[in-house]
Amino acid sequence: MRWIFHISFILLLAACGEHNAPPVHDAKELLILTRSGPTTYSDDGVHDAVGFDHDLAQLFAEEIGLKAKFVVAASDADILHRLKKGEAHLAAAWLIPVEDPEIAQTQAYFQSTNLLINHEASLPIDDVEELADTSVHVVAGSRQAAALRKIQERVPTLEIVEDARQNELDLLEKVSTRQIQMAVVNNAVFDIASNYYPDLQASLQIGEERSISWLLGPDSAGELAGKVDAFFTRVKKDGTLARLQDRYFGHVERLRQSDVVHFIELTRTVLPQYRRLFETAQASTGIDWRLLAALAYQESQWNPLATSPTGVRGMMMLTEDTADHLGVSNRLDAKLSIRAGSQYLSDLRDTLPASVREPDRLWLALAAYNLGMGHLNGARSIALGQKANPDSWYEMKKILPLLARPQYYSRLKSGKARGGEAVIMVENIRIYADILNRYEPSPRPLDEAPRMKGAPGKTGLKVAKAAPGKR
Image (cartoon, rainbow, N blue to C red; front, side, top):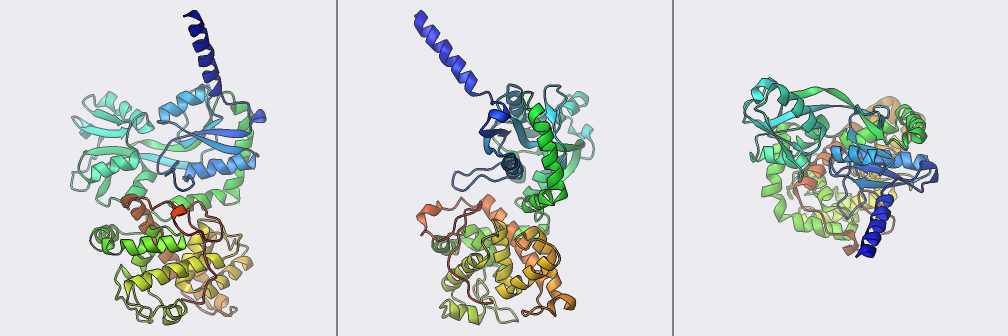
């Protein structure tokens, strides 16, 4: 039996060694600890992983010439434990600095507060003393749990329920459906969740505002600290950080509570009768059906008989010229309208230059759906004159409103346009699509759809044929 013991011991040592991150200068991959969450990392197994921290850390890895490899931990506490053991080079997971001499923190890249959330039908909590004899739910091992434990020292009858199986959005869904009374999450998550669950209210700030930073492990801090510092200095100065913040958080506070309530109600009463048509459109264009449904809602609120004073009609609000170009004999036929509008959006995406990357490619195509490609190209030329990046939605949504100013549109062949309305339209569609992504199942894998030319971006979307003229 002794030989079995020796083999087992050797295998154990080998297994332990596999978890140690090699020195950065010898590494081929940058090992990054993170956790699943709406501000950090999400991977549905179908599309590429996304998330604010994910994208930021991936940019850093590319900058230092390494491939990013993300290691998903169970909680904030698990991240700290594994980082100290040397299992990763850094941690990027919406973390606050910790008082631990073995762990270093980087520059702050966000400010965050913890909020106590309850249902709007409940009485708000105005003081921590009112938490006596109540139960508050948090993600297990989170900084919110740690913040509540400090309050528990003052309010010993406060019950803290740490849930290891739910993320922050899941907890807020339970508050919304009255399964639990209260939860504590960070303010960025609450801003996102307010669009999914408009009956939530933020009652009380828990603790002080804190800086959000990356954390560096004891074995990698020496090699990485200077590189990370230079990276954050650059992305703050050149606007990369602001663009990334806008991509994930810039659109989340645009809708009124009543708008969200109305939209969610129609997803239950109206959308089901058209869902199959949107799924069919996804199969032919490769564009997520939920995005197409969001576009249709913005255009007509899913009314196949909608007509505007300017003459656009139908579910996808097509002009007569665009309908003729796409072979639509009846714009008020929901099936024909959804098929044509979806193809038109796909065509517009394919027309944009190859330099435009996702998801900016999609947002700019949506703006062109509203304005026409001629006006979008006019705005892109204005952007070049303003030394703005015409491939960036973050910068173009500042440029598009200039199409209504004579000093700009008078120099354009395409003339005047209501570019500000296009910006509002795109930002609204982003929110509606986010809500549908939360409420509706994931679309079928895109390998079931016909292969389109062009590569998918992070949104899992593809491009199709050349675009027709103005909508």
